[in-house]
Length: 257
Length: 282
Image (tube, rainbow over all chains, first blue to last red; front, side, top):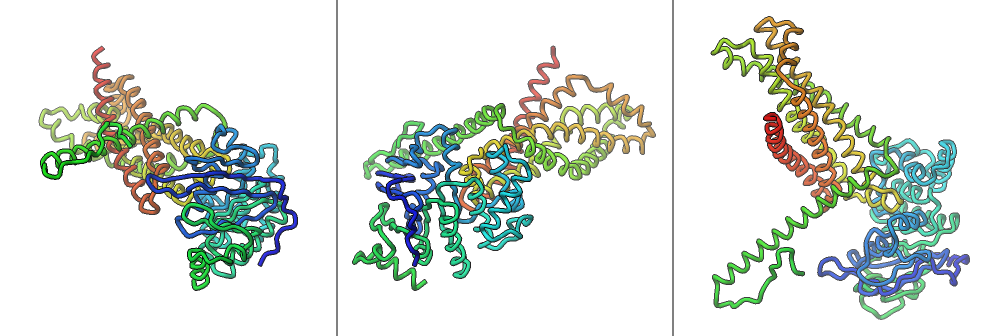
């Protein structure tokens, strides 16, 4: 069980969502979601597959547009920004994808260099190399610099995916199912890395998962998405201390798995 | 939601089967028409976005050069072989008809007109549609379903500019160059066949080749290949960039890129031919 990060600033909201609704055709995925993320906090969003967890972080990063509601990220209303303003905001948000989404035609180094070349034009090649080495060391994969993504294991790909998001020093990290498809030991390593990133880079994070071990290990606060709305929130124990059959079933099935 | 064609499903009287069938058929047709018009709208928006973004920085010059290499240099072996064989086969098949009239001396002129005006651009475009459009469709399709395009977008990089603009530009630049090369190789194939049978020298052959064609032929061939190149790049990018439904979608994107590109190339060939023929009159 994770100790709550003492550096969390409860007076400073980095993300504030109110009344968020999103539907695909006739299927309403999010039915009025309210959420706050405080500075320095790791917030875990739990829920079954298909409940709109990934949709939520895609809306936060501006990949999807909300149907209704306000999404305020670092003081900016995401859906009202011009493309230029949205790009400026995105530089402050790191998005770690479920399948890592590494550019498979590029080496690890080129993957990490890709955002640097475009957004830190003042850097020399030497500076870029130094930063790449630093983030690779931070995720424990210094030796993978010249490998292709196809040569890496699932866990290594996740780490490189996280390194690629860290390279632009984001204030907010969004993790989409960080432990999905990984063996238990690699999952524990990824959980440790998420906590390490929070501590070392002073990020605020939303972690989308249905893995309760991950939720327990990384979450300062846990919220549970059921039927398109957040039904429970609090510490891990508080969320599951309930008579709600849906929540209990989620807990029991997760541990049977 | 009301469709573009204005039809909506209507509550029907169950006793009147014929009316019911007609209405449901109308509804299905209206839905299909809606889909066609929406797709056309997407296509035009995609093309318009290309013309909007191509002029403004950042210019992905390195990626354009990479793609020029992929599309141009890597197509050379296939293009060389195909062009050469087509030159030989076309010459060989044309000879008997001319020989009946004792006009085999006109072979270089015939080959020249056929290859420069039509076969060079068309063969190059069809081969490129098979190799390049399917490659682009599969590559971008796979990037879409593995969220690599989303990853570019969230890292504040414009994926349209990096992936689409660079590939369409490279294709538009490289297909005319490949067309010139195919034309030359086909003519060489034709020359070998003519030389073997009629003992014509290389200089005489090419003198007759250039005598038979005009500036309009070369200009038309160049313009045609630019349009074919643009079509191949655009179709591959559109199909790949908008693919969905996992790995099945990647296969579909690759397949429909080839089919659509080839179909459009034939339609364009037909239309351009009419325009050139009209110009020839003046």
